[in-house]
Every structure is written in C-alpha cells, then in structure tokens.
Image (cartoon, rainbow, N blue to C red; front, top):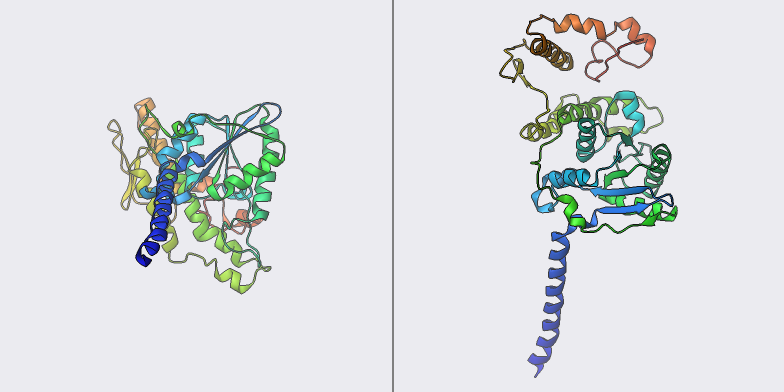
Length: 354
C-alpha cells in the first residue's frame, strides 16, 4: 500500500517532465519563429525587428544558421536595415563594430545596395566597462536611435536587426510609442529559400578585418589614453601587442572564404603575395611590405581590372601608390588624429583629401 502511494506522485512527476520535454522540443524546433516581430505605425509604415544570436549562428545545435538569418532578411525585403553597431565609430574609423551577424548583414546591404543605419549604443566607463552588456540604459539609447532614424525613412519598410536580448525590449518600446503589433503569417517560411544556395556576402572578409583591427588595436589604445578611466577598467582592454586576438578573430575569415558569393574579390592573399584567381588574367604580386595589405590588394584590383577591360597591361608599384594616399608625418600631425606613418596603415587610415 505504501509502495503504491509512493509510485503515484512519481508517476505524476514523470508525466509533467514528459510534457515539459515535449514542449521544449517544440520550442526548439520553432525557435526562429520567436525571433521576428512586426509593428506598424499609424501611417501604415511597416517595421520588422529580428533578433539574432551573434556568433552562435555558427553552432548547429542552436537551430538557427546564418543561411536562415539571411533568408529571413531577403524574404522580408526591407527598404533599409538598422543594425546593432555604433555609428560614431563607423563615421570616424569606417568600422562596423557590432558582432559577426551585424557585419554579415552590413556586407549584404553593401552587395545589394540597401541603405544601412547603425543604431547601437554602449560606452566604457568606470561603472559600465564590460563590452556590449545589455542594460535598460543601453536599450533606451538604441530605441531613441531607432526613432531618430525612422524620421528619415517615412513610408519605407524598415528591418531592425539586433541581438535577441534586445528584441523584446525594443519591440515593447515601439508598442509603448503607439505602434501596432502585426501578425506575421507563416513566420517559419521567412527562414526558407527555395531558389538560392547560401553564400557569405562578398565584402565580409574586408569588413571583418576592419573590426578585428579595431578591437585589437584602435579601441584598446583609446581606452588606455582615457584619463577618466581607472587602471582596473584599462586592464580589461589591453592592446593586442602580439596580435593573438587579431589572429583569433581572423579565423572567421577561413569560414567566410570557404563559401563566398560569386561577386566576391578574385584575389588570394597568401604569405608570399597576392594572386588573381581569374583564369583570363595572369598576375602575381610580390609580398607586402609592413602593414600595407590594403594597398597591395588595391593595386591588384586596379592592374587586373585594367587588363580585363583594355587588354593591355600596366605596372603599378604599391609602395609608390602608397605615397599618394598616405600623408607624411607633418601632415598627420596637423590632422591631430594621433596617427603616425608607422601606425596609420594598421588602423586602416586612408586619407584622400585634406
């Protein structure tokens, strides 16, 4: 009798656990359906919000791949895309400083000619020095940036791509603004593609390398010279002197290069020079000098493009070309940006006019 009484609650517990497991499997199988929201203004403007998982899209168990993320962007077919990256650093350094999914989205916008706006906000202070921490203050700033940017896109379909942690805070803030929640019919279909094979956007390696350099060199250097920050905070942002962080980040490019779109660059950057991969152009460039890979790749592009279009060959010395775009020490000093001829290339500085 006592044994029967003991078995009864165990049986109920097992049933409950079984139901919970089934529900968990259903949620897991349809997790992407919870990552897209649609609201509409009282003027009928459509705004979509898509929550992404940053680098976890590389993990198969997450059940949300980069291919599915890009399918959703294509199927929503926005007129403009807002991404989780900071505009002030983009304007000053030309870097998309958001996570990998934001860099991929930005590169896709470049490839397709879609306007892109940067709406993220965070800063390093003595109180909040952790990178990309999600807080109410940060979400308030992101929301205000979104509202400000929407003013310039009246009547346009807007897609806001942000980390999943920002999705519902941003969605709720838009609802509080008076926007109406709209149902997305068959939301799971957004992540499917019947015609196109997935490939990373053509410019992703260039965009990602700028980010890798920014977080390995430029941003830590800015932190180190900021007199308002404590030594404890500065210790969290060491300059990547041995390039270990940069090299680690650049491993992502091996993944990208294995599956780039057909419009990608046709040059291979090896240890012994740049090579053109097009069959109709025979080209080899000697190894780069110093941190000038950007100039060597530019010369490779100019020389081989000219040959393809004209049928003639030209000889351009990358070091001589460097003299035309990289100012001398005196000019750099006048600009007041803190660059020298030795570190300007590392920081991606290319000045076209003064």
